[in-house]
Length: 138
Length: 138
Length: 138
Length: 138
Image (cartoon, rainbow over all chains, first blue to last red; front, side):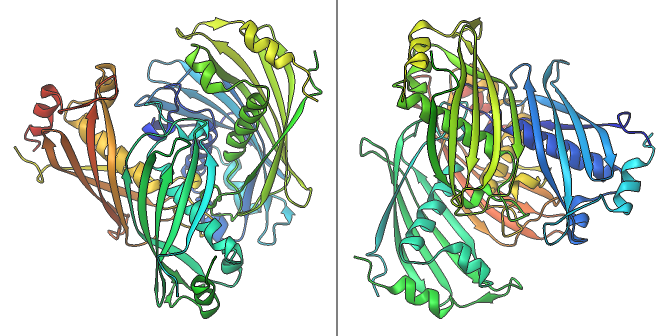
């Protein structure tokens, strides 16, 4: 089990629609970026979240924290480094660091997740996905 | 049948998240505002779109046009006037005019819709909803 | 000074665009809702954030936390109760509780803010706004 | 001048936040995708829109039309083909075709743009940018 070691890197370019009247990225978008970092992390492990939903499991966010360190601007190249902090039992925890093209840390954060079945009832992370999360990824 | 006559008025206040780096509302948000104008129009007729989905019908957008006339700003009070242009057979058509607190027309537009059943197959507007749409609303 | 006592209530109706493929409100939208709760709180105190920007001051979010308690659905009526926890010196802190039409707490959270001047340099909360924040609001 | 010939291809992966309760991409997002197709088109010509704003010019959208042909889903790979239809005088016109990983056309559209100076006054497309737009791009 390599929780806290697997770090996956995902890049994106800031969209105009993500900026606000302050001329910087609106703070709510970082949660969406973290989500895409997390999705790409899972895809790299062979776990497409869209398959997971087809299997009848829904991963929900139960807590999210973002620390904003520096502004991001339109056309910036942002790298999201996603780290699995915990991925067994009932809880998944991910941490994130978003860095721009100049190596400046623009935001970091953490999300906690639970898994629901098709009836929105809380379940443990299904074995199949628990194994994927615990795979050595290097 | 009073297509083109029923105009419903819905108001909203511009959110900070809706602005972009030009200091004005990002153009994609007008489609979301028109959608809420349309939803509120239907609710006023006694037709909750969430009920419609529970009945197994999905209204999809097949065409949208927006003409942008003037910028909108954070905290502006926007009035969306929604008019049903067509609401029988297979097609629903709505038109919209968005006006700010000073009476300035900021945008107008039009959307065309079709109805799908639970299998995403094209169907006529269900009778129940067709009657609602054709009700005199004054 | 009545920090932590002033609670302001703001209501909104869930938009279709705010839902995601799980059929519930996407988690990033709660930050936008909290922001509108906060904006409306300030407006009630006679402080329009758009005026503040015209005065050359920008309030930035430096930390945000959301605890998601229950899902929200399209057309839900959400009440955001915003409380000023701290509003003097350099830091503004707000807390939020979002409740649906059935009185169910759907999310709560906290945001920390700093004030920048027109050159994006950190300053104390301007006196004028500090007084507004400290007004008894009953 | 090669208006209508220059077609630029840009790809993106559908984000979870872009889906709605119908399980498909919400229709307003296509305008944002077209905008990123257009931005990337301009970047490929050596024209960063962020530079243009630093030069004091703002390109605004005056009309947008979208025809929705098929739904898009989370994790789809979407290709936006952007074509410059007109780029001289006062008006810029772009057309777009969005296709998924199976080659299915999911949407097509058109946007019309005008250029404003720093005082939001209408101007012709600045020479520098007009030349960029008229460069042969093959």
